[in-house]
Amino acid sequence: MTAGDRTMVYLQKILVTTDLSEFSLAAMDHASTFGLLYASDLAILYVTEPAGHKGSKPAHGADGTHQQALDEATRQLARFVQKNVNPDTHVRQVVRLGNPAAEICKFVGEEHVDLVVMATHGRTGLKHVVMGSVAEKVVRMSTAPVLTVKPRVVREHIIAAEDVEHDLHIR
Image 1 (cartoon, rainbow, N blue to C red):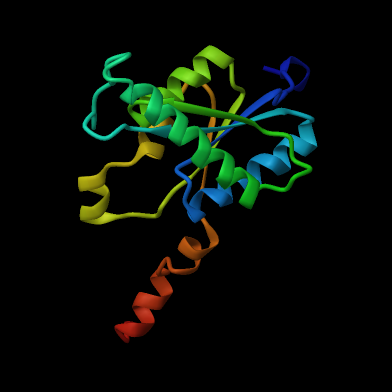
Image 2 (image 1 turned 30 degrees about the vertical axis):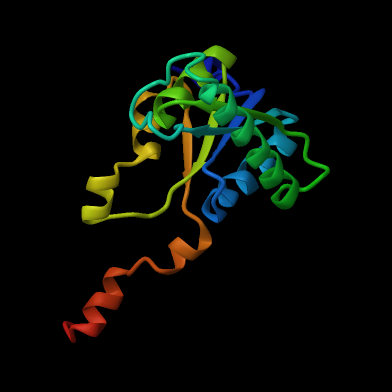
C-alpha cells in the first residue's frame, strides 16, 4: 500500500453517548470539537432501561409504561443538554429504551455513524467485573470506531507506577 492508496476519513456523523452523568460531559466536549473540525452531524444518545425491564427489552405497549419511560427519558435528556451543552452546538437528541450497549450499536448501524465518542467511569477491579462496562461492550461490538474518554477527575486519580514505587520506597 502506498501513500496514494490511502483513503481520507470523513466524520460526517458523530455519536456521543450519555448516561446523564457529569462523566459523560467529557465525551460531549470531544465530540463537539470533532464536530466543529469536520462539520459533522452530531447526535447525543441516551439509553435507559425502564424499571422492571432490567436486562431485557420491554414489551411494546405494556400498560403504557414503555411510552411513559420514553417520555421521561426524553425530558431528562433535554434538561441535560440545555444545562450542559453550548447553545451554539447543534446536536440531535435521541432516546432509546433497552440494553445500553446493544442500543448504541444498533443506532450506529441504522444511522451509519462514523465515530462514537463515549466517556468511561474509570471503574476497575471488582466494580468493573460486577457492573460491567458499556464502553467495553460497545468497543467490541460497534461497526464504527469508538473513542473512549476518561473524564479529567478520573485521569487525575489514576495512580502512576512511579507513585507506587515512591510510596513503597522501592526506588
